Amino acid sequence: MELFLKAVLIIFLIVFLGLFLFSIVIIVVHRKTGGALFVPTPRVIVQTIMEHVDFSPYHDIRELGAGDGRFMAAVEKTHGRPVTGYEVNPLAYLLCRLRLGVSGLSSRVVYRSFWEADLAGAQIVFCYLFPDIMPRLGEKLAQELDKGALVISANFPLPGWTPEGIIHSDHPVFNDPVFLYRIGAHLKRPGRR
Ligand SMILES: C[S@@+](CC[C@H](N)C(=O)[O-])C[C@H]1O[C@@H](n2cnc3c(N)ncnc32)[C@H](O)[C@@H]1O
Image 1: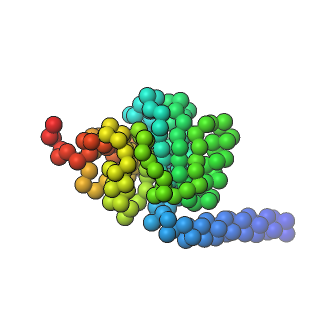
Image 2: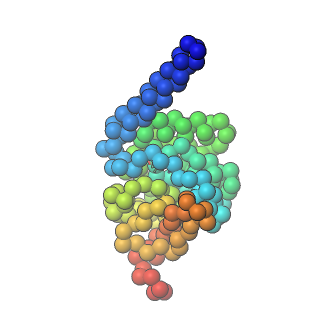
Image 3: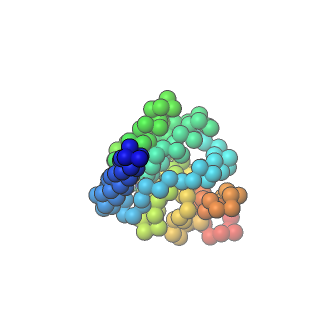
């Protein structure tokens, strides 16, 4: 019985310390993330994106806020193309490095804010961020990406932009929209050619 209580206490302490560390990290990186917390995209949504978008013709694919690397790994495993991701949350960064390393993938994650990254030349940009930062992100993407580049935003639209498509998973719970935008056509009014 004493051993059982000790085990419960140790598990409780580990969980408590884990949550404490997680919260501290979120507070420390908040200035850079602007509220885009480390919440991974549900697997079924990643899967839906893999089914709808053919990444295989593209060579420069980026992810803004790589999280645990599940999107990057899915692109490389499904379409054979490596992704460059940016991440500022140290826990997420380490998880991402671990995932890519263990799976032997050549995608890479950079420990840097994507606001400081030059996105010129990127052909596909994926993000799952936070509504408050989408207006600023839209300005950056419109300034740095070339005509024809594809922007994929999970859950949150880019304000004032017109998507060329919106996809959903058919899962009863995890069915938030994923917005697809094409640079050059992103300001067209819906229905206009
Ligand atoms: C909602 S999570 C999504 C993670 C991953 N993209 C996914 O789909 O599973 C947003 C991630 O973006 C990261 N992030 C937010 N602002 C960032 C910034 N300025 N530079 C790099 N990463 C950032 C957060 O740390 C967090 O891991």
